[in-house]
Image (cartoon, rainbow, N blue to C red):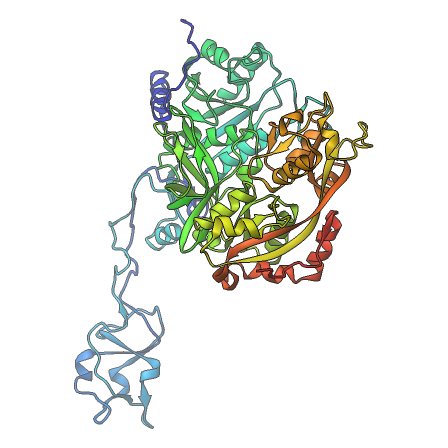
Length: 637
């Protein structure tokens, strides 16, 4: 067999065509066999043949109301002033669902019937023929097509089929998915891990995704980075499954064996797809069974399943892929993308000013929490370099529109108090979401100016006046009617290793030779504070080793120090505490929420203002460390 190179930039649609063609060539029928099952187990399954009505429903003319059955002709002329009286033999008492007695053709509701002392029925209005009567076959007639082949059964489909005389239905069996975790560094979930070892969360996730797609799924033991063991595991799984998913080892590195093993065992249709994240994808066939090799990064693995596995599994089951509802939204900030690659971006969604706003989440292939927090998926076509802030985009929804409508959209500076507020708001009311996007204080004010958020978190220091927030509000939002609400005061300082081994005491110490500093991004209030303090100390920014190295949150700065990748970074005390690090105080600053004045009375934001008045919430903020709540909730403009 000829060697197949690592193919770059194969569009996803072309990759699917090539994979399916390989399955057909290998003799794989792109549909699983049919089985007959009882109706009570049929919800979610796809019909393998049409379902025809075996009987009419209802099977007879039936009363649609409790009352009396009458002959419509005998009620002609009845009115309030000249009622018609029917002798007992001229009517019949019926309940809802009863067969209509022979000779009668209408029903009068019980509450519209009066009786005299001789049990004659007094009618004060004429009734038309077949009033309150369900005619035979009104719902479905015998021999009528009830459900077509390829239909995914729902709860009411099952009820309709039963009413039409069915007791069972022919459906395609559930596709079977086998997930093979691989890697010498992978350990089972629940294991203690040493440096360099990773828990096997991917196979747990992929099995759950397969089950959500209506499949039966199972996972193997972890397969080492050994070609022969991998080949044996793939071949064994292929004999028991309709789709084998190999986790990790799909790239072209030293320990990446999936592509050559699939090629040796069967057919390697595609290796490398123009999709980000998830580029190093393997699509192949072994023993007439589809094989999908997905990257080891969790976001890449999840989206690889979404893009490739879901459509194949739907075809195997004989149904259409389950499509997410879609909506148009404005993108909250500039989103850059690499041309030639279809870029799948997770976004948070909220309704601002009557329109949906999509805020991109962190895009790293290993940022699993971005999937947890995502409300939707945005696809940037390969032909585009991205989107500018405010552009309209098409988003596949991962949450209902109703839930999104109760989302408070906060854009701006990162602070742990907002994370705590998000948690407590959701605990108090599961329908409320506080979605924060960390783009820095200045970016938040710009987003608020452009109508892309409800709130902008800001702690920008004006060097000329020494005042926080308000001077920048005037510069960026001049002419807009805005309110500024104090959230907290907080301690900013140097986050350093436990015990402060370098003995750092002040901002001036950052100019030491060999020190590794980690900064916040341009536009972040913490970076503005750093520049202010450096200027006071007479130090140029380029005199701080590592000044150009950026992180987007206080926790990311603390994580870099905790991991030994940096010696110091400016951040809040709560972030240092979270990682068990030492903290050298530098400044106490206010952190404010900026918003359009009319947003103060918006029902969407009302739960947040209530929370800020809650003593329990204030106590929880104090427990984070380094926060003062004496002005929490006070409007300062």
